[in-house]
Image (tube, rainbow, N blue to C red; front, side):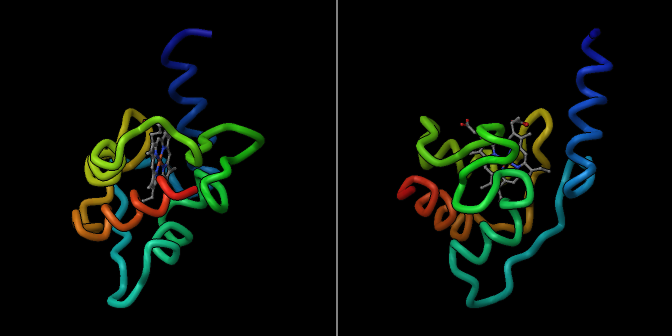
Length: 102
Ligand code: HEC
């Protein structure tokens, strides 16, 4: 399988859950805590409680990523993961803290 097919395949997999885009316009509502934000913005790909999807795929619980790396990932996205420009650094920090506590 060449790289293009591979990336397209992952995108297709992603679009089955939320759509394959560079940026996600999810915006936390005032009063949402880290768990609410995670459940609304992240669990569709990363599973409930950071447990991953389809077994261990995209598991976040126990990740080696530092708090700052997680904040950066939320704000800027990854190769496949969409960026969440509307989750400010404060809320991203809350979600990162939640994930580090798992
Ligand atoms: C559309 C699916 C999707 C959504 C929604 C999503 N992610 Fe991701 N995430 C991915 C994919 C795919 C990767 C791995 C590849 C990459 O970096 O793009 C990833 C990687 C990560 C990583 C790096 C994992 C590691 O161990 O280094 C973190 C941290 C992360 N996501 C956190 C989050 C958080 C927090 C949210 C919610 C604000 C979120 N993700 C929402 C698909 C998603």
